[in-house]
Length: 147
Image (cartoon, rainbow, N blue to C red; front, side):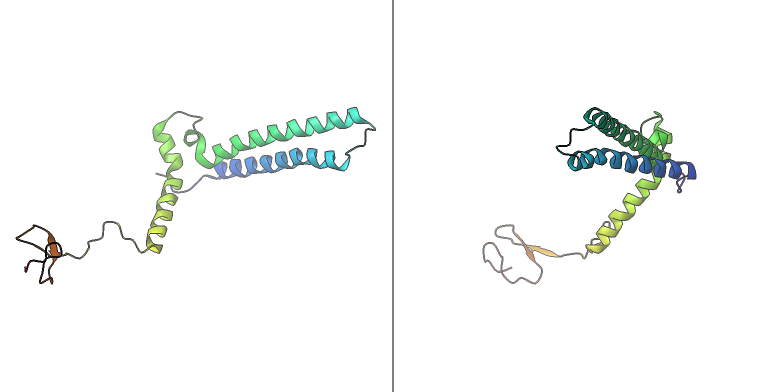
């Protein structure tokens, strides 16, 4: 399996991100111009058309940028554009490896070691009540009988 993301996918990711940034700025500029020209009704029709064009154009760029960015990040099969499970697995392999690495880092930080052998504990069973007691106990922790 591939361990690197191709340059085409990186380019698509960054292009999609650029579309999203431009779309977000266009969409936000609609609100900014509304607040700056609040109460000014001169040339209202032209300002309204300009605002609508920027708002819908910004939303369209946000939507298109999101699709292009997703396809760049996950590949065509990994993002669901191409329905091929084997190819999707190959496309998503760098992310799967990264997720496993992040999980391992979190477990190491918490000082947890999955699959590690633990110390063996010897327990003594009480003949009177059947309670398991630590090996150095002289009396049962449940019923108090001598072990």
